[in-house]
Length: 207
Length: 207
DNA sequence: AAATGTGAAGTTGTTCACAGCT
DNA sequence: AGCTGTGAACAACTTCACATTT
Image 1 (cartoon, helix red, strand yellow):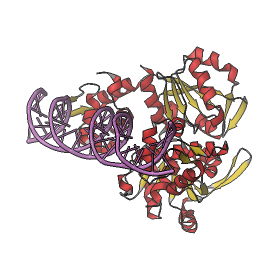
Image 2: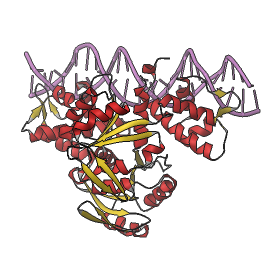
Image 3: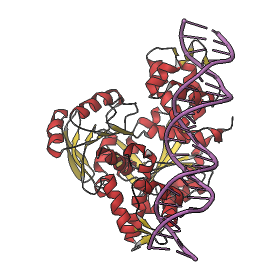
Image 4: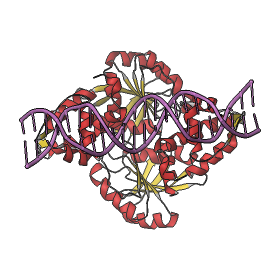
């Protein structure tokens, strides 16, 4: 099965399933049916089953899925079994928040460096963090074999920074700048645009 | 044209077009073709035109679109012409960052209150902000006629807080908690899950 | 001539219906 | 009997082709 045929949304749903499975595991549940897991994930059971068939067969007919096994399989697929190194570029309000956000480590990502055109030592709550100058990027990316970067720079420098990161070997970017980055086909960009999410909601408020 | 027939993705793209149009406007450009605007927005020109026809006819054949006029039309549609009041609930790392994030005001949203189970006065950089106790929510929502809320509370209390907000009159939620909220049909929820975005990227790193 | 607006065709993603295991 | 796995039907979205307007 070629990966390119798999709907991108299916990959997102895999993350949702993964979370639900972990919760089940914590509750000591060993086996789950597609019906129950799907309900927890907020999708139809047929969709869950179809999503899984993109990758193989993991269930037992008449019984369901082994929670632990399915959970591990998905982690494997998503590449979150081992800690993935990440750099953050652009330490404004948002970058600072993400730096102090502990959620990433819990989910299998390690922030190995924070960079900004204005480097320095910052205090965030009870914790201090070092923000390095941009010219330190190559060394850190090289040392930790970083493939993933979080972009929190202002829109007017986002493309430039993206180019730099790609040249240094990044292949996946999480972009918070409200612009459309143009990158080569082999680079994956996920955009998060907070203002856009609000605007979208705003539309639905007026009936 | 019924709003329910309009693809949700089209509404998201409207936000993108809006941003591109503003940039064109700032550069003193008065007229733009679907070809050029689409390229700036990272979509096909036919898609842009189709998206616009969901709402009416705004262009001039042989000429293109009036930048200012199209821009205003989209703002009108999205309901961002007038300042929309928003509350933030849950002032942890992320909530604090969003509070100090100036982007919202620029885009037509006004944060009229910040709430947390641990209220108090916080310092963020050079600016101080008041975080109110949860029992102050009804009064603020009522006073400002708030329909929109940003949820940054921990996953285990997200559903409960969502219920409370909905009961108080919120109809649109921007949820950062990594759980699937169950809400009545007439309520719109947009989810932003940072860990999930990283996981999704992670998948694409392994070819 | 240039560019929009749109029905029809094509593509992608979701759901159904049921065959096939355990 | 119960539940998965999947081809086929269906629905949603995108793109094409071209008629239409300036």
